[in-house]
Image (tube, rainbow, N blue to C red; front, side, top):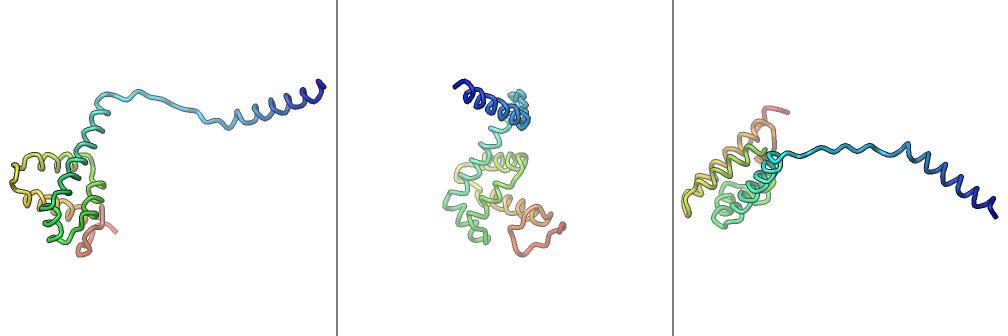
Length: 131
């Protein structure tokens, strides 16, 4: 009876030793407070811009410009953190009930410029610099 248990133990041990070579190493690093704050601020800025696009008057202006809300939301998702911060600051600087059209024109121009630079393709009437 000892013989079959010994055989099972040896096979289990050999299998374990073989699979130890396939394990992956893991590296860990500390995340600084600045990195956490930067990521959090970027997420807040994206949420603020997304909330702006949910307003009916903004959606109406986007439709007048020929941009669907989904396209605008996808475009916001493609923005860098710096661009997002700039747009969020611009949205914050608009007085309550104020110049929403100015903010939309700013966003439209920003989208147009990134389209011309070839970073995205939202507007069919633009020709990008990069191919």
